Length: 306
Length: 295
Image (cartoon, rainbow over all chains, first blue to last red; front, side):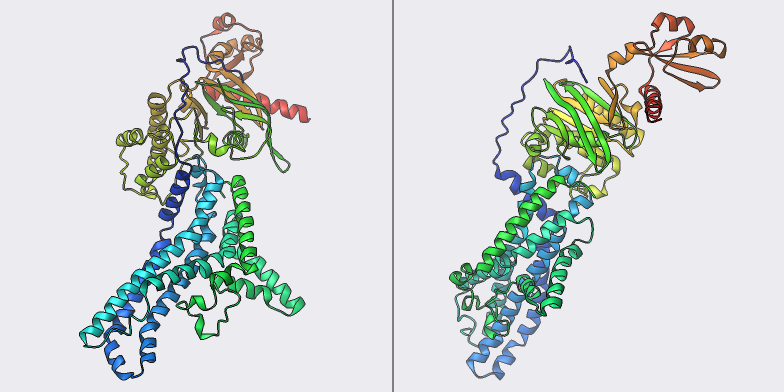
């Protein structure tokens, strides 16, 4: 249509307000949006930690009695160390569950509640949005799990020490390892075995969440079941199912789950950085992640509310 | 400055053609009403303008291609796509924080000022607000953005008349300053009757009428005639005729029907038709034309 500029219009004010904000700003706020929308990302680990601490308090009261019963130092170490391992393991399991549920809803929830129309009305690109969403399982959740584990283990150490000291026993058994070194090892383990290794699973879930119109987890699982089932029928083998399984639980392929040394407190036994980085599977997985995320960005351009 | 320019804009979903070759040109400082029946292609055209859907043909919004440059375009374009698309889990304060965080042209103090005139509390979650309040909040957020183009797709659907009136009042008084451009679609035509500067009717993916409000006033006339004058009035070939309380109301297009204002004034009192009456007349004619063609 031809509409003449309004004759009484004021001189055109060239609104060249300097739109000079840092390019990382939309990304930062997109991550914050994810955290306020999905508070379970940090509440779930904290909740698990709180429950665990309660259980720990109850057993700690009985610790001096147990320590008296056991004479050999090695067993004493086990007795003391076991709750710490269980705690770390529990936190890793929480990480996995949180990530699976987060990713399955990440690009689906905003379409279901129609809020995608609001998000798209703001100058935030689809790439920024998808990357911010991927940051949650790949950076935020492992960091939260790490911080929670470290804080909780510190509290546990203090409680243990206090109880042992109060009953006149030595705390040397508790302080056999550097806490700082253990913290760094745990961080390394969380980011390798529980983040980079299972990353393809999370990125796949993100992609499916941007595509599915309902039942995201089902759609994500169907191809896995189909390929695994086909392989089982045709070749009578379970390699694909095993592959996905090890990815999901965060075990690198060379780790033998039956070995007693696979506990999280000993990550270096199998997953030295050299070992881990030279695994072709890692790089194939990361390439798959890249493809999934690129597809998710493209998909989000086309998607509106469901 | 041309804000929106489309040539041969087309969008089909499978075999269903939603927008069928639209030519459109909207200049700065206009308030354009895009009116059409359900499924006419309004929302599809709007979505193309906002970069929410791909399209065929040429389309530039503020000189950009909306489909490939949506995020850059959204620095200068705001839209309310529908009522209640604000994320329900968000608190009002979080919504302010977020928009302030991602939008370089958002004036938070301004938004707080608009919200101060409402009963909306900063600590409320959006899901706790009434539909009218959600729209007030959305409008407060949008009006605090120094944008060049504002697109409103059924912004007041499902709101009561008080909220609707307030919505357009604040839009005109607190936002529109003639350097901005507004495109609005709605079924509640009477609400925007006195807001618009331009009018466009769209049906089955095509533009069936496009004029400024001044043009509308000089071009279309409505005259109410008593039964004894009816045959005389009909001789002037009105574009549309309807009956109310035993009287006939005839609508004339002075440009096409070759009558002038004096001829009609001689019959009875003439007035400018309301947008909804004009809409019914134009749509009725267009539909029967289409049926004629298909026969």
